[in-house]
Image (cartoon, rainbow, N blue to C red):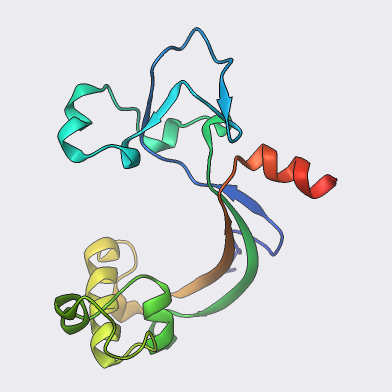
Length: 158
């Protein structure tokens, strides 16, 4: 079958977060491009999570976005061709590095980080695309901007 790339260089994506609206009737206050009526679970300690009726990220409107990603590169490869360094870029560390609280391999990755990535992949994708099937994947590199997606677009036009 054909492999369709999910994104191309230059695409802008907004990160969706778990949130709640403090007042759905007044969306007038804006701080850093985000309406002040949005409260994000990531900003609160876990002890305060139970006090709000959280809305799942899938339902977060674009106007509430505060993190924008710009796609810089897209590389198509087989899953098992991921490099040690790429496993670290994916946010995976081996158990030794986690226990030390720092990267023993200086963020270059190692066989252990590769195995940790493999375990994570299996835990998330075992039914749909197991590690052993070695599916084609798109490795996406992006730049992070801490602003609303609409704000970034306006700034780039100026």
